[in-house]
Image (cartoon, rainbow, N blue to C red):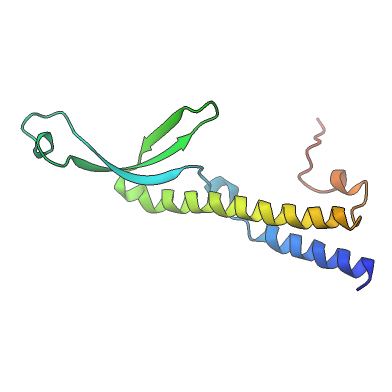
Length: 125
């Protein structure tokens, strides 16, 4: 395989991975889980029983602080999809990164390529 063909093959693979990314407005870092809580009403069954089931999404923030948000039952499918989208984004980033390492390893990257593409880290303005 020629150098040009190999570069084209890797770039096409990278583009296919990037096209699979979910809408970035639909991602949420965190874990969806169920726990129980007691409502505080002395006559409620939860005072002596198992408690009320509550679905939460939890995330550990930088610095180690944990944050939990209660998820209403009607939003559980949305939150489940958002957390799955987050996992998928990171999976795709790892795939693109692997292709970029291969392009670098085989010296198939042009010096100006990093700044010429849409979404580069350099911004005018």
